[in-house]
Amino acid sequence: MKRTAYWNTYNKRNRNKKRVNSRTWYKNHKEHASILHREYYGKHKERIMNKLRRLRIAAVMALGGSCVRCGETDLRVLQINHILESGVIGRRRVGQNAKTKMYTDILSGNAEGRFDVRCANCNIIYEYERGRIRPHE
Image (cartoon, rainbow, N blue to C red; front, side):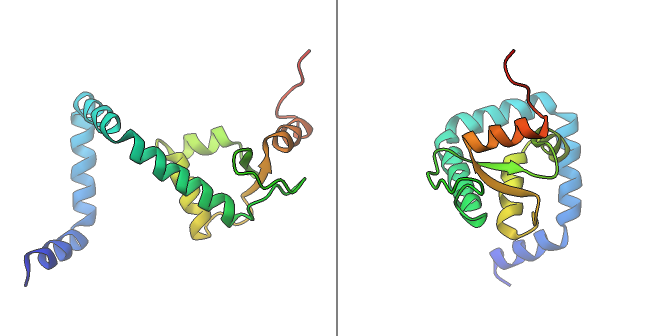
């Protein structure tokens, strides 16, 4: 068996064991892990941001690519609207990689009926009508 094939098989068989070991290490070395994450982000910020942009555009296009209220198609102003839950609540439930998780859920079809696309103006109006935000007094 070739070396790469062996490691692929090993990784598949021991996925849960490796996940538990990784979580245990993280819990025992939170400060060091935080430093490593910051260093990695600093070195790869451009690549990470480009990946998020590509995921966001793909998710918006998967949801129709235009505002459901006014039909706006300019990607600079389109936002993904959370229909069933507050965005903050959803992000807290999912955790650190909430945006990436939301985009991948949309792209994989696991977000049926939970999101739609609205332009910035229509999204604010929608939230105001739902009573989620208050006008300036």
